[in-house]
Image 1 (spheres, rainbow, N blue to C red):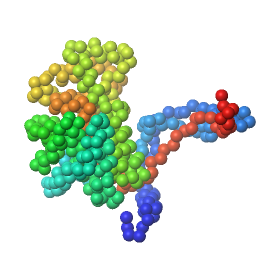
Image 2: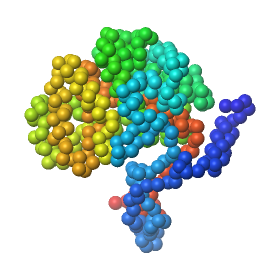
Image 3: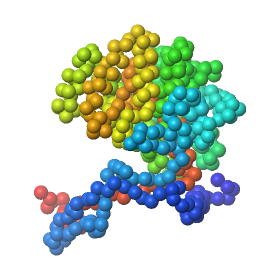
Image 4: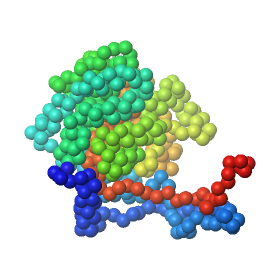
Amino acid sequence: MPPGWSLREMVARIGEKNRCDRSRLTAPSRRPFLSFAVHAKMLAGKNDRQGKERRTPMAEQVVLHRGLKGVYLDATRICHIDGEKGILLYRGYSIHDLAQNATFEEVCYLLLYGDLPNRQQLAEFDAALRASRTLPSAVLDIIRSVKDAHPLDVLRTAVSALSAFDPDVKDMTPEANLRKGTRLIAQFPTIVAAHERMRNGLEPVPPREDLNHAANFLWMLKGEEPDADSAKAMDLDFILHAEHSSNASAFAVRVAASTLADLHAAIVAGIAALKGPLHGGAAEAVIEMAEEIGEPERAEAWVKEQLAQGKRIMGFGHRVYKTEDPRARHLRELAKRLGEKFGDPKTFQIMTAIERAMQPLRAKGIYVNVDFYAGCIYHYLGIPADLYIPIFAIGRIPGWVAHALEQYADNLLIRPLLHYVGPMERPFVPIDRRG
């Protein structure tokens, strides 16, 4: 904040800047408010003070966009998804190119800074990540005190606590937010691994600066250095989960950031949204499904029985994709390799049998999504099922940070409306006269 400015003055100047900037924008950099509208039926209020029927004001003009489906909230330069063609781009780069050629550290830099790094930029960014992995002892004490909670709840609590120890927590400049974002990317794996150790009666394994992000996570989790294949598998999983446009958790991050809440607060909002089974919990359910089926030969009958009962098959279907999730291809190939490596091809065979049994639903746009084979990979890496969602968060944190930074840079408070359809102007009845 410039010297002598109050917070009110800063917010007012940011708002004025945003209004001026928006006046200069032309399509397609700023798109109008678009949607596939669901027209609301006009609902009447009941019994005003004169006993006459009253209608909700302007009810006939209201158009609902339930779940904000099909609504363009804002313009972004972070991620592009074409759900009809199965295209996913991070900052303009195909997810296939990134999955085959990049490291997670490169992808983090890309999402935060907008371009792939050169060697010097990557070395400096990677060094900053490695130097930021250690948690304050007070945060470790907090993790220990809540070790019996769900791992994602522990992650959320620890990130909130970290704000009290971050030297830049009150500095909202872009440079400070980048520093905070880098530290959070580095600290997420340490939180998850430390909690896993503590709840099993073990001491946390200190991070190692000689290991990359993915390998260091597995080292801290298990206390032994992972082989190259396992480390590469974890790295690829992080890349594929790093960003996915305005999903529920990224939207939560942007809503919090739009209030000018600090970065830690915005990220906590994202973690909270990820907790729900309609967003982050599918990978855990998928491996439970495979274990229940037990044998590849049982998969087809099991799927048909579940569908006949109107039950959902986890790991299939997506709010955006009407074809195969482009990330699923890489995880399928990876799961096959890991199954062969660890001498457990049956789990992968069950998964592919489920996928074959679900093929008739492709006519309805229901295809395998990223969660389906992610659970299989975590299973092969020996990771407990309730860590699957926190691992999702470890991969997604650079995307969340990128969304918060973009929101801060051109901010407008996100404040949609709700259409009231309840009764109007009801007379107050004293408690003794209520039925």
